[in-house]
Length: 143
Length: 204
Image 1 (cartoon, rainbow over the protein chains, first blue to last red):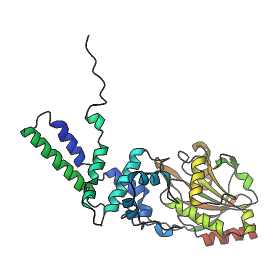
Image 2 (spheres, one colour):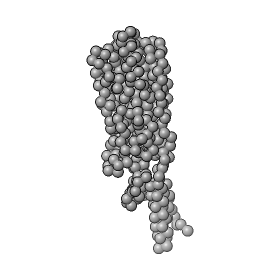
Image 3 (tube, each protein chain N blue to C red):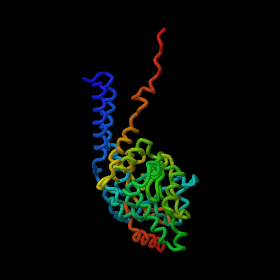
Image 4 (cartoon, one colour):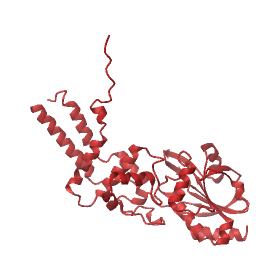
């Protein structure tokens, strides 16, 4: 049986296991990105043909860029792409970054190490300070 | 020792499940349907109003008297119809000849004052590379904007921060301040709008 010492690890493991594309990630992509970028990231969304400029296939650009570069484009916009930073907080922007990474991996052969990229995301999403008790207030000593 | 082994197994399994879940394919929901922009001839006098433009300068609608004005309702973080409306207006602006440009003004009025400050509107115009010589992007506080939206028959519903449902209206105003044409939908046809502008310039 699990001992009390194993319980935190078990819950953290469950948390990591649940770190797939969340409902929130999919919703934010559907609400803010899909119209132009399409379900696959090819730039074939329903309004893309009516735009005055072509929507780039972001699968390759996302693959070639690091997280900070992707986040910058999402926050500051590019060309006619909206700048989302005035409206979205860091968690939502992070969700968008994660979702475009996931979408960019669909339907192509991904390197073995890319399969484990979600682990990095999952690791970064865990509130470690809370889990490990760093932000717990010091216990007051009795009289 | 056994406990450490069990703990390690739980961690490894959970990590693998998490990785495979995230790496698997996903189909985001509901595509946004593109809307047509039907054109209607109307006669709606628009009362004067005051807003603030993208430079932070006060703007009065009555200062547009004598000009043909193309007005649209958009917001800068809009991911669907607004880019199409702004692009369509830009196409109209670029098609005007030198003499027409002096008699025509373009106004983009925000439907999201919570986000769209003058600075953000200016940055939006910059990304579109809009010629701002006869185009103003307007904002104001909610109380000031509500009567303006109402005057044009634009319904605005805030869904979330930076996400607003609004009537996709582009309106053409004559020199006397009366709305004469209303284009509803995502992509007003620039050729038809241009034709209507020229008709109003010829027969105000």
